[in-house]
Image (cartoon, rainbow, N blue to C red):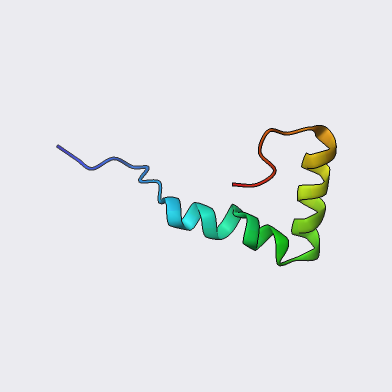
Length: 45
């Protein structure tokens, strides 16, 4: 039996797309602003 090809890591996901990483850059803040205006249930992970 071979291993699964996709092994999602929650830590990697949070570090790349989390609130703190989004808030740390100007572009990330724009992303969150856009999502807030759109009315998303979650602004960031």
